[in-house]
Image (cartoon, rainbow, N blue to C red):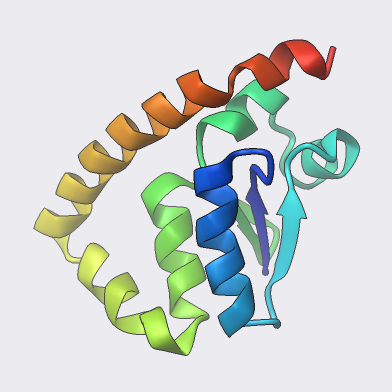
Length: 116
């Protein structure tokens, strides 16, 4: 499994570094490595900046679904994966995630101009 994240986002990298310290079986990929990120996902840099992405068994997942898949692979967080997978919680999680992800995107969208 591969997790694609924005290492240039201080909030994102802090959270991912926490997961990295717990699980070294996951392949962590900075989305700012544009060639690798695009090859794995087929998504633009803008799309990748917008949400966390996971590639598992050749499929690309994003947002809350990506977090749930990632958490399932980290023993300490399996409970959280199960929790956010419950229908009502899943829909609330998507709403909250999209709000937070939008503001993180606004905070980090300057990276789009830097990569051109």
